[in-house]
Length: 150
Image (cartoon, rainbow, N blue to C red; front, top):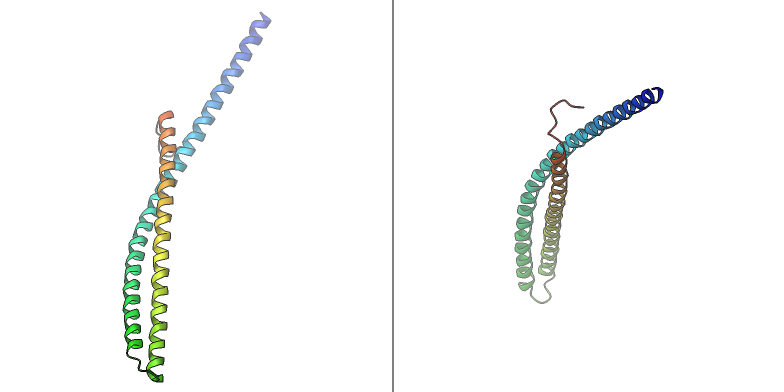
């Protein structure tokens, strides 16, 4: 009979421990779920911000390219109008060439920003996809948590 009580106490301890561990695991999973939802919402905001920056940088790059082409044409015209030995025209052509070079650099910088932001958007989309997959995995193994669960 004594062994029976010991066995019963041992089984009760195991059952209680298992239930406590299951509750702890459920709380951890719900916390992960809520954290993933927050991360996904943040990523979606970053993606929208990146999309707006891409269109802005694209516009700036196109405008800078147009200005660079105009400056290059003016520089070409200024150097073509230079008569042999005309120092004034030569300086004017040199200034136009410098200006064209600056405009080309601006266009290059704007294009780099545009490309960089496109790469950032790709990375954000990949990260969002990973988080959504992880969230889906949690949802398949656990009912959706109610609001206010800590």
